[in-house]
Image (cartoon, rainbow, N blue to C red):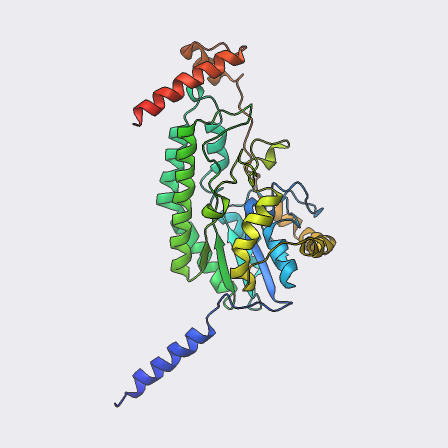
Length: 348
């Protein structure tokens, strides 16, 4: 069969493009790996952080550090607690270049205001507008976030044209139980919060696929390991509070690292003591690397859940309407149970 020259040329070009497209092939020691994004990538929640002159809460126990240590990758851990899509663009993308081989990114939760939503929903039901906060977050995710992600992902591809890029999602925080004494997440609120996480993951997946990136969903891996589960891979309300509702050491070691590493290094990483030792051995070098860009990182605003404030004027007015004695824990708990029962009945 005769094939015209233009068609033949096009076919050859497409073949070359397919062969040269970034893949998740086996990484080689020394490959450049840049970890972008927010607190779920920086390692917030692990309680051990780099002394890099920032409030980014970067950790050698985070999954990018463990993955890089296992494969001998040259890691640049730019992910920073509090980062939004705009922050990633302004402070992190300069780490990318034509020599970047691997990129991972988790971002979007701060754009949607998840810390504020959790703060609102942690209040007793009679004192909060949890459903309103969730509605606002879901409207933003459905309406605005996808465009922001598309723009950001396009910039990543432009700056790192030869890199394999992995977009990492967020786990469900709850599995129907809230064992923390100072929070009042009802089962119904937990279900809605989990559904919002699912919605966010679905939009992250869509944006990743449109950009030709790989999406990794942690939902299944973290099932049975949410807040108050045994073992718990996600912190509940914590001290310091910045640790709250983030993956702990086990969450990064046993949850995220085996899940994300195949797309970064080409094979699943089982975190051993030796892997942890290698990651820790790079602490000072990584801290020095990030300290050089501390001025950039200082522009990122922390996004932290806050303790329920039962003494605020707003809550005192709500308590008066609900007939709650704020000086009596039993009264607060009883009122919240009544509110939760009413909410459950309304949603049947």
